[in-house]
Amino acid sequence: MDERCYGHTNKSDRERLPINTIKNKMSTEGWEEAARCFYNQNWRGLIEINEAKLKDDPNSEFLLWETADAYYNLGKCKRAIELGERIRDLYPDSPNAKDIIERAKAMLGKNVK
Image 1 (cartoon, rainbow, N blue to C red):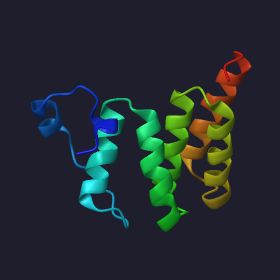
Image 2: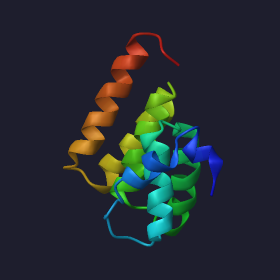
Image 3: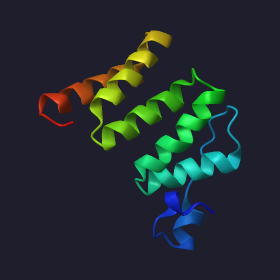
């Protein structure tokens, strides 16, 4: 078990986590680990997992968006915008791209790194 994603949760918390059902090359265990990071707001752990998975599936809209959102939650808005723009380039009609770009630009406007 990788503690970077579980923090101080107890077993009952882990058992209640939903398994992400989005299909791609990530194993069920990989999705569970990513879901735990998300649930525990372990953004660095989620970024690490997703960036590794993006090596196998570099154009996954979901992985790109979730990674951008994690960077946003860490206050790294410039990186979130870069990933949002990549999503927009790959998927021009993506509401995810528009969402993350708008949120990150608004935070930058408030002088957040």
